Image (cartoon, rainbow, N blue to C red):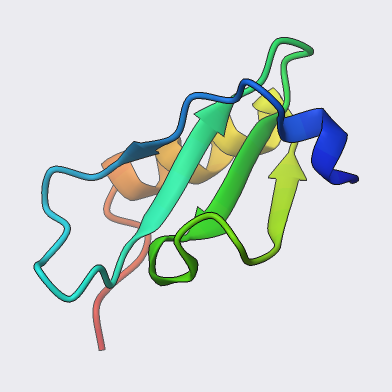
Length: 70
């Protein structure tokens, strides 16, 4: 992915993010991909993308409590 793919992306952060900015931001791109980045990089770090299907599988897994906090 190049940075041009993210021009105009609208980034969202979880309402559960803490004051230390320890969170991941997500942007839903026009081509259907979902971009993710680390909040603490303040937009200067790397981002990666997943397909909408991969994102749905991940969020469904969260809703089903498939992941547990260690």
